[in-house]
Amino acid sequence: MKRGNSPKDIAVRVSAVGMAANILLTLFKLVAGTVGHSGAMISDAVHSASDVFSGLIVIFGVRFSSKESDRHHPYGHERFECVTAILLSGLLIFAGGGIGFAALQSIITGDYAENPVKGWLPLIAAVTSVIVKEGMFWYTKINADKIKSSALAAEAWHHRSDALSSIGAIIGIGGAKLGFPILDPIAGIIICLFIFKVAYDIFRDAVDRMVDHCCDPETEENIRLRAEKVEGVANVDLLRTRVFGSKIYVDIEIGVDGELSVREAHQISENVHNAVENNFPDVKHIMVHVNPFDEEK
Image (cartoon, rainbow, N blue to C red):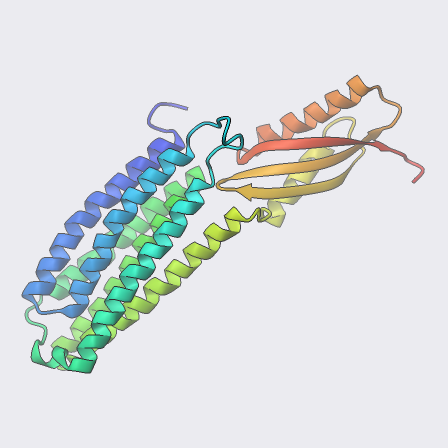
């Protein structure tokens, strides 16, 4: 793979672009929210600021997970991407909780009525955020799917959550401009709920990847069919898969002619091993066990 196009390089580059966009958006939203007296926009700025820190976490996580296997970690470091995704979900919950608390406090104290939204700058900032963050979502998601990175996928949904929160800000700010100032803090609560939902989805996916969850049925069936096509394989007796971070480990038992020599049976198992690993890039390792096949059974 060319230098600069490795999964680690792609993930770091995408995260760096996202961080630069988030820094600019955070500053723009903060100024717009402060000048325009919009609590929803200030909350949105806090959310964008959390994206800056999430970008740093992703860069660190991807760099660490791409390290080669060593004596203490013979299966590699891929699961560190799952740890990264869990940290991102925690960061989202923290940011969402802060936004929801500030909005609820504004409603209880009546602060929204004393400091109504001023000017159109907050609304312009919210619309700009939706456009930019939705673009960042697709840019990050496409690259995450390309390199099979759970951490980068979590970062993509972090961008999407920011776009959704900005939509809530548009509703709140627009409502406030039309004479319904309470809609501004209500939008903050809606933003909080959106963020919590995204955090839960990220956390659930990361946990699935950490507890040896099997891969999808379609992939398993394709692996089975590929093994059965290898010359000398009579049938596949057993197939198990487990997702290890962004990679797949496979355990397979094949049936071969019981009259073959050990050397011949071993060669068939090697052919199965190579056929699966060469045709399924996500498979990091496959263990092949050979059983004698009796046609009379």
